Length: 457
Image 1 (cartoon, rainbow, N blue to C red):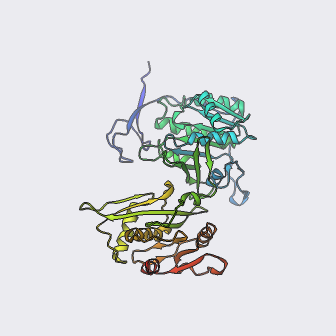
Image 2: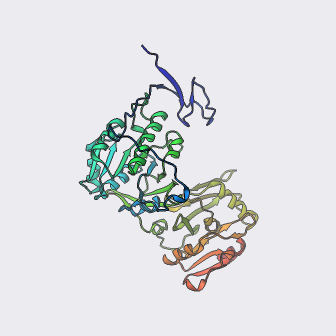
Image 3: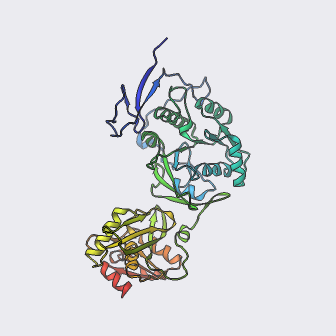
């Protein structure tokens, strides 16, 4: 009997070792090595082509001889998905969608499969039975004669069905449940995930069929499996949101065919995910009157301008060390802005508890909302409400200066469209800007102190 060969593989980065070690020398993580069996490679066990066919060999071509054609795309009925993918699904692309359990990844993929009525879609589920998927489809209220459901985890059997059905779009839910006979290890291990993805990547490129992979995430919020998985795919989408809130955000992390700053917003309903065409209206709460500590910032995610509501609560600290808490905004940047307000503006915030929240459950990293955050903090400190018809769009520097931001015209147009009457921007954004073409009043400033003199009088 032949001796079974084993190797130890890091479950975090995929590095192999001949023996078990406590700390990975590659990613510096502890206790991530797992023993896996290494079997002899089997030839073309999961070849999606016919057995007697041979893969075409590619030949080198001069760069100036390559035709400069744009990628052909499939424009779906989901406008938000088209946006984050860069205009539609590219033929032959491999798309990875990650998110927390229960966030709506399977619902999003099933809606895509059911809405593409003219295309033949194969939906492969390794986590749910065909009856469970049927129940979800009935809840969504859609059906399609070209949607095929397959409950299977073996890539060998999946490629057998692919040869028979010849789908236009392939959906795998999820990649961690698949296993290939080429690797003798458990499903979900680093080796299995890497090999199954490689087989699907080969199928996508050779058949020019777009493939969607649903992936799990770890408790730290990153995609489960080896980091090489994100390098293999063409596009990585992150499905974010709180399960207790109605809104979901589909964010582009990597995209070889478009921008990596796009996001799509959905609303989770009992009948599935609904596209939100105007997210600024849902991100700005409806208030009966002006409230202290609330300011509106004009942000841009990708090509989409967003009006974000910043809420802050400033109160006297009950203990020795004041609390600093932020939701949806970088805590380190909040501490920096608090230091700028105290040092440059003269506001006594060192003995105050500060709580900051971005309404709607969205996370913003753009520095263009710095001025809105500062205005919200000062408004909450003095209990002086800011008009709900005022917006802010500027970055704040360490010297207390109001710095310019990019694409200011889009931010002004979005604020004007939503009914705002004035917007505070940097004086250095006025170069090349024509205020006469806007009905909204543009207020340029160069110093943070001048902004608060105008707001507080």
